[in-house]
Image 1 (cartoon, one colour):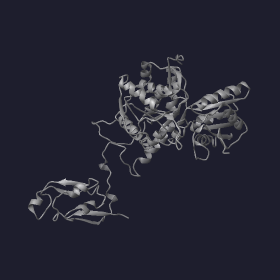
Image 2 (cartoon, chains in turn cyan, orange):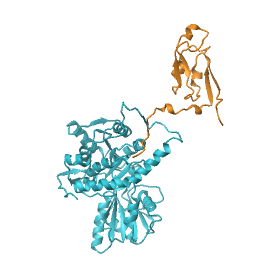
Image 3 (tube, chains in turn yellow, red):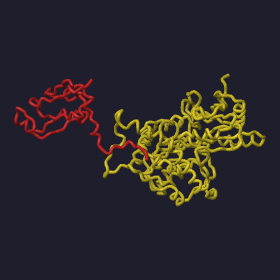
Image 4 (cartoon, helix red, strand yellow):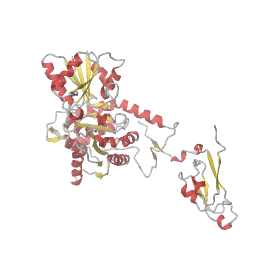
Length: 393
Length: 99
């Protein structure tokens, strides 16, 4: 049974929304280091801690590496923990990202997608998080401030599930979401408490039960088994994701069910795969093209890790062509997302795949750019195309 | 359920003796029980035994606590032999070595 769509009761930026999400999730520990455009998330949380609106310990640190190390430690002590970062700060966390996932700690972190230098640039693109795709963290790319808030709540439920136990990073596009106000529904605390029970970490540090944590393994020891278990848990987490997102829809009336969102896909001939706020512009163009009789649709990737391979194969079945929009720099054969889509389709489908790179360093991806992309997809082009790129004179 | 990298026993289970190529041996008749070898060992591979368990020509030395190498963990780095002020730790070839 689906709950009624809840009315908006606040207007807030994406960063305020995720801070409220962390508060509603009753996080007990927050540690972070400020970096534009993430700073206002932890500023808001610091204010809440200082005003005693949340019962949490807030620890200031000297770097992002330490921020995640502190978050790692408190999570290992059995306390639901939260941190947030962006861009170069996320890169500085890279080592601890592996430790958090490898230690099977269900941390939830907000990442505001921002470009990497050089040259310095604070606008949005996904290269920072695409660089973390093999760290064992689940990845969710949000499209609205509401989704960013809701993903914190769903994120803890998914991450803390006994058969998943992997951390999640939830993304917002820099400025487009992080610093732009939108109407949001803030759920009631008792509704959230009913949806998200308190954390019971089975292997938390306990003086009465001493254990070795991540200590040492020879090649013949359990090292390989532990890594295989991570990969299998990531792959199998789609069942938990489907269950939790459906429960969220039933409880709160907002539908994020599954790992991808299909927009106008039912009788589509051509489709574009996109994520984040570019999917919103894409949907607008799909609507316009539908009005003039073009059978086009859009697939929005909500989850990138685990990669929704079967979902993509199912959603693209019967299409005459598909395009993939990458908002990141990649030196792979095709592109960060295109490579994964092609890998999913290989052997299951023979439709042409068009690769697009657009919006780097926050460059606008305009409505006419989407028309151009759909034109390339219809023509069956299979290369990699830079959209909105000003060719050197 | 998942597999987490936890151990319900200590890392004492991880013997590192097979890493050893050179094997230190303390000549107790020359050892003055200064414990510098114990202090410098990077792997805590020394245990301490009470006096009178090990012989010494000097009865006052024999009454002191003495260092004993734990060959389950000694990796044969030779730091103890290098630091010993009496030069009474000899580095011999590890005879158990299997090639």
